[in-house]
Image (cartoon, rainbow, N blue to C red; front, side, top):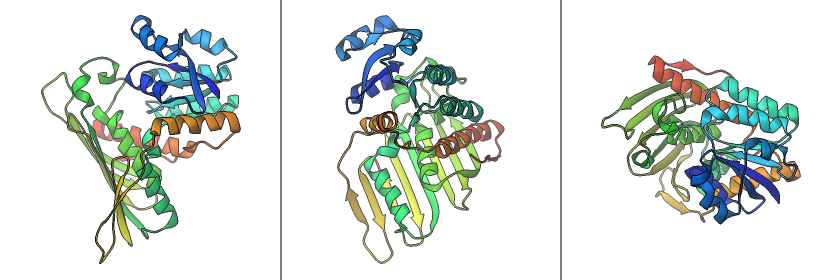
Length: 321
């Protein structure tokens, strides 16, 4: 089992700790609000530490980052220099340049790195990826993705609402999941056209983002994300032989010509445990990363292009990953 440290014990950091226990076990935690985190750490058997203490501890083989986005690059580079494997929550960075530097630092240090996109591990998404790989939908033509949630009503301040930490409204939160799903299934983007619409009242964020996607392989797509509406997840792939629509973690609807829609339900799985176990396999056994470096960069390039398109109110071309 890999002994690891968690950096950041906000809502998501705590969820990662609670999901661990397969191939990875947390024993240390780095959290500025030590007093607020002390009860959770006592419950989970975590020793509150400084970053320097964690990086100097030879027993710690990996660090998991659930910290503000702007801190990721410095923390990844420090961990790599200390010989620690790194798992970083999405978004990996706020710019592609930083993402390339972080991946390069881990590569140069010879340490594994993984990025947390847990929805790639949802059973229905994995099944959809398999259908695409086997060609059962025919020639791929188009993809649509949507992700909305109610988290914004509980976030009325702090770093997650700061433009410097969370550019593009809801893109760094729910929106990035939808974008990554599209790129994970259809590959890198060629061009994006995005629009952000903001709605009062404040301070609770109420905004919607719509994006037209043009993929490097010649296919098309659309994605949207809305904050402050009930949770909804949809990824719909259209091909010449049929379409497959994922609704949530375990449900898929397959449509083919001259046939009734087929609704498929998959057994539920813990996607956070699955991505942490995949990372542990990288560290312990040298397994390939669940998300390739090229794919990680493709999502970062797409994310940066969406934010740039929102700000410029114009289409933005995407670089090669």
